[in-house]
Length: 155
Image 1: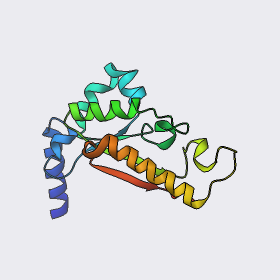
Image 2 (image 1 turned 90 degrees about the vertical axis):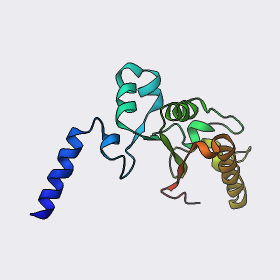
Image 3 (image 1 turned 90 degrees about the horizontal axis):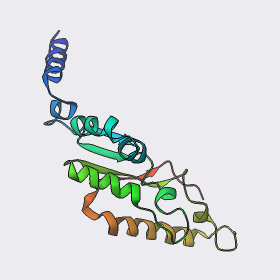
């Protein structure tokens, strides 16, 4: 009975709050993974107000994955990742970087040398370190935390 009463009190508090982030502001952050291109660039009138109202933490759905940021060796595209970080900071939201390493959505060049041969373990580790350093230099304290490994890369 006590648990049910506590749940009902908590539910009634949530229903009277103006938003999810307000309802839980003293407990934890409310976040959402968003597709920055689809939700805030192509359809801002549909999503921007909702995201601003309900959330205080954002995660990039795909904009920070390696193939999006560094699609070709030496070529970087931070457009969508920057847009997410800028939107979040403009709206006093935290950003969770997603993801440094994943078994999927890696650029084709990551595991191959210029001749198309598989790179050595040492070369792969060098590329991974460079990737981390590049993102840290760009985003530093603008990103509060990172998903480091989302399903391991097997080499």
